[in-house]
Image (cartoon, rainbow, N blue to C red; front, side, top):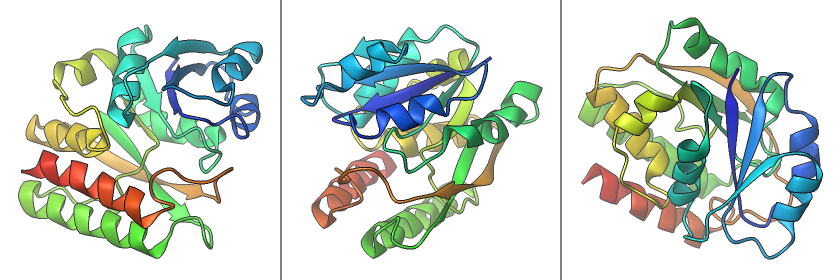
Length: 213
């Protein structure tokens, strides 16, 4: 069954809820990216495997989790309680069945869950991805699943916020079967460090633009 890679930076408030809702057979692997709120200790206390990644960056945390995972299939998801782990089986099922190579959870946002500037940035990126690769997606969702060895073989180099886009772009170029399924997206616990602020969104778009270039 899959390993679930959870990049974490100061998510003490959300961790208990997220870990308590992990589906049976799905192993949480928390990658602590330099938290100062005790997130790593909380995760260990709740029985999760914890990997420390002092190099800051979303992609650095995701890669550290991918490198440490041992299961054939891995899932990724944000650990801020905006996504429900109980939706993971729907995302992972096609990969486990061999009918898809990369599955994305397309976010269905509840009111206020995603700021307007973040929605606009996401829409622009998916349109640019379609223009460049022909891949039609509604969302570059943070809940996703794929096979560990194949993901490592893609050679993703970004270690910042360009990681999610580079994964999809490289997978598309490699001819992967990429599909998406809708998942609910709720108000996160705590304050967003990326899409909750204009500055964070601009930083993420800048990193993704570098990947597209």
